[in-house]
Image (cartoon, rainbow, N blue to C red; front, side, top):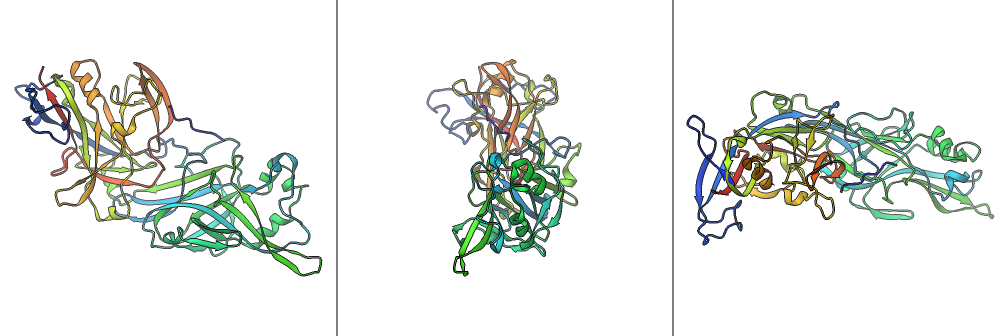
Length: 490
């Protein structure tokens, strides 16, 4: 299996014809940006200013969203059919489960006690539940299918592209699932626990698994793949939520065969169970289909004029290009604090379809050759010399709670770009166009002690798909995005 290894002054002169900075004033009291930086008794004249920001919406699309997830990442299943801002989502699962036997793939072993005398009771597909994003009260009908195409060896798949074909349905009629109940305790034979989605499958499928032996399917791993390639699972009904599941390392993800064995007396023994599980040699994929037709995102994406509202959906999703046109013209000052501030513009749908837990800001570097021209913000998000990691929390990827003009609690992001801005006003750093989005991982360049390094698979979020937010753009009337700077003159 593929694995990820996370890697781990300011002068304000107004030109005669151009106003570069708005709301410039001396600070005598601590503010939420400058608080704690300069004591009010040290006779330093400290000012607070804001630069205008321009934001432009866009969607990643299939061609420019290359995210692949691996087995240890959370996978999602379900439908979101009623998001007025971001349209529809269809999340589908693809995975293998294999016999739970030591040495099975090298020696070939029959995975049940006896082939000729088992009395089958039932077979249940069990998935380890991790949580729901959206409206958990609406039930969804879940269908399970058999894959007709095998997983590629040691491969991961793009989440925007359906990875594998599938055919026969293994649970005719489907199964109605209430997301709100998946955290409830389950009491079944040898498996009393919580956090399971249990789907009963057709016994004909189970008998097929029982009838195979070590001369065919159970001869080896490669042989097993030719007889059974895995599962596809999707929701086919109305819904407004996606449900998260874990595969790797989750004891709740398995295929359970329940059966009885005859005793010597001729009577049947008590119930027994055998499992197919997900372990290191198993593979998985997650297909996340976004449909923005008729949504606010569809109307906003790709527009030439700057946007008063910015739409950020967790990958695979949307992003915004951010420009700060006046920044390169500012002369030198001491920058005590510079923050790019953005606020959630509340919509009633936010109560269930909540904002992402993290947003990320990187820079487009036109001087970089090759396909990946994105980099972390120099000086403000460099690799740590001590452990080669990125201080994402200090950079501001996690929001804080704030209040909107109506007193409602909203999420606010304050990206710390102090050192980046300081270098720009000193003339030692190019001012870049920025990209705002909500990724699972970051891939691009970052500096370590002044030298560029290529990073791949650095985790910025905890999962894909489960978050979206509408923010105020640079020209929003009450909640504008802005670069706020606290500075002193030289």
